[in-house]
Length: 418
View 1: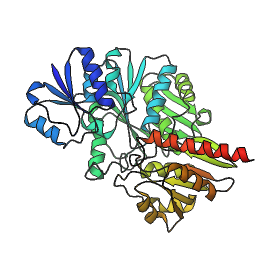
View 2: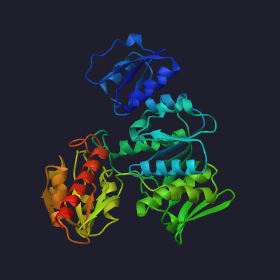
View 3: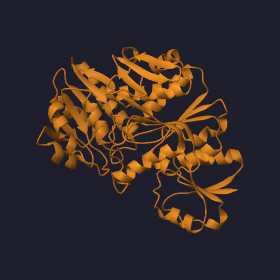
View 4: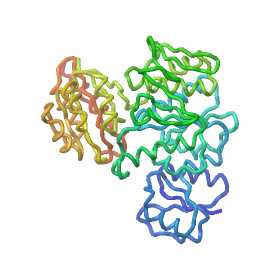
């Protein structure tokens, strides 16, 4: 068997590793290269970043060559339980939360997918006792064929990636496709796009009302066949409304996987959060600096702003065709000034300049310095871009690290002068 791997990124390299272990031969194709002779290949493996209407995919379909997504390929050679997590926001945190709790309960578990570790890299290491916790983007869900998840979670669906999808409806359809590939699907009852979803094997979590998992009197309450699991929120390390949603989804998932109340509490307590998600970097002269570089869309920016008062906001980045107008009341209420970076700086300036003071910065270091000069003791400088990073950085991690470096440099300089 010979495969054509479309893309040389993480997914492509993961697929190559799996195919090599299976004894398959393969070749790579990268966008811009000469199109190979398709008669040489039995199937193709598609990286999620390649749009479904890409010319190379049209050529393959016209010649009857099967196309598998990297996640689909990995699934076909994996064993054990599959847990799938998606959502516009919160999916990496919830994925890591579930994985951490499974490890704490001494379950054999792997983590991967959109999380940054291709499923292909560990598919052959799974066995019937394994629980693979897979974060899925809408791009990966588009490519699913025979993939089957024992438990899936859809945390929320808000506008994103509108530079790839024709409209929000198409993006939402891609997310909800996961339901068709799941034995049980857990949905957020508080999300207006998910609340009315019907199905035989759908469970709900909610912060606002009774559901299969909900919050009452400061406790997570999870209904199970044997009764109810109760976990005190006060004992869990991550704070904020968005993390309450993540905890509810994780606790309900873990209960379905057979973990006890004690195991769930222990596992959730052990998870301390991921970098670049409302991560406190330092305090400088009474000003707190928060790194929320993972906020790559307006809804994630909204949730960050809801967690802080007296904010000097650093925002902006690569344009994904998203609208920020609905954030104006929150920006007016919480943001003392906004320092804008990247290609969306002009758009954000036009959107927010009538509700808060606006400044521009050509680099992250200058943005940090301007933000600090605009701040007073007790303020929070919040990097929560609301946009992708690709205009100035390779990814959100590099953007977050640049912010942290600039903050720590500022702290050293000021402490050296004092």
